[in-house]
Length: 140
Image (tube, rainbow, N blue to C red):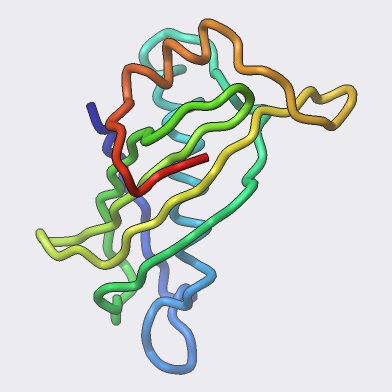
């Protein structure tokens, strides 16, 4: 099952070339990911989960430029692989049925005291399993 949320494209996300700057796409996926693990859970009466994670790797395929601000992108998120302390997240960013970008991040759970990776808990694994769509593309 994929999680869907919105990312708002602001006027200042556009660069000198008149399209959304490449770095902004990482902001879009970061905000969508945080909605998944925190805001959406709070809206549904649950505690946030996996807020103590970092990005270990990020990839973006830019497919169709975005030339306007003031629009909302649909961001689809799903999990493609789960390891001991990390997991792969896939994203599709689209508007009006047009796919603008695909992204992938490897997220690593972190112990906030030691600042080192930690194993995923059973609760976190169950949360991630509900979004799992394994593909050959994603390896941790």
